[in-house]
Length: 506
Image (cartoon, rainbow, N blue to C red; front, top):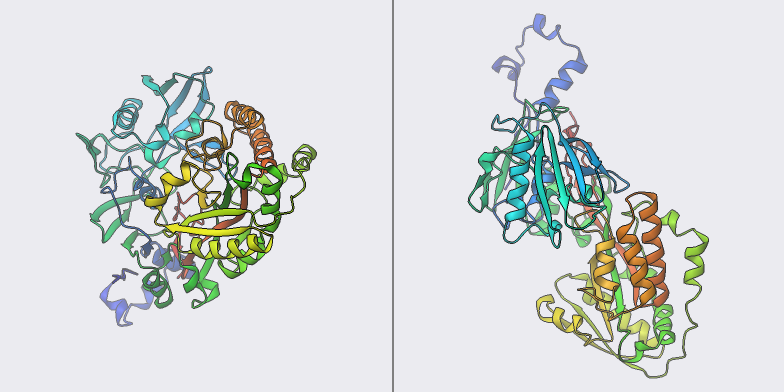
């Protein structure tokens, strides 16, 4: 399944142990080790094959980002703040206009120089695409150049514009990449690895780009294989066929040497949404009874084999700043406004979830048991997601279990919170409409990135939790496999998998 390419030997003499002593004495052991390391390639086993020919305008963009071959104007740091990348400086000129200074000395893999005009053309292609990259959904903007600067103006003030341009779907590729409506990333990126071959849904090959503008890649290249079958990915790690493996299934983890697997917290929350508009859960006290009935510890232990985190709120440990915000007195005071739980005696509820995520039907079984122990009468409706989503959004369930991404492409949770809990939210399964929550979400949306925005997000979260419209149960983790590799990237946002320092350990 995998083709291994390791060390390129200095000469045929070395292979049979006949390297002259005079030559071997010229190099220290550390020099030899570094040279050996620089000629080794990294084998990757990826979860999903490309769905759109590796077009950066699709979700395939995240593969290009994880391979470090396509780059963006900005990147997000661990605090979800935007930092310059292909832009050497980012400044907000006024409420609606931002300036991105294009980094000097950057060339594409095909030798073309990066300029403001080239970057503007690449981004304009994304703006004009049908459909647009989802990071631009609802955003009207115009792009112009001024010397080495991109000036981007939005129709409405957008404090997250610099974050938006960190999305892999807005990667900057060489002009040669754009032909009509298609975008070809082969040989047209700017990253430390050049994509030299894309073999459909089977594999891809990347080589170190020797003229990279930043720190050069430590490894000679990447050999990528798409392995949708979880058992096969786990086997590739166990046998050493792959050096880095995406998404080891929970059920396979126990069969692997624990030193080879690493759990990465994901910005994804398994949540029980309660219908606040009709049925038993229209009563806040009945919602409180459901909240108190949920045993998070048992769900994490029985279904996720302890490879998940019990939820303290909507946002989990993938956002490291959240825990500190919850310690604020105002946050705790808001939670204390929740009503006492009602005594439930035979309230009938319809519980829904879907089969696409294998764990959710198992979670539903436990939730049914826990709610029935609290006095509810529960019936389940479990289908494929495509057949159940419309009913969930129309409020046809009293309770619905959903695994929900809480941080979307901008690296910010406000869009998710508005979508799920605002009166006009497009994904409002709880049918929630609360003017205080809407006001808090509007304030969070308008707040500047940083401490002000984090505090506003926490304020909105506390109000949503106090409503009991949603009962967060656990935060998921992804299990990443690594064998004899140094500095693999364990990224909760799934934007990076290798860095310039990632290498095979000699």
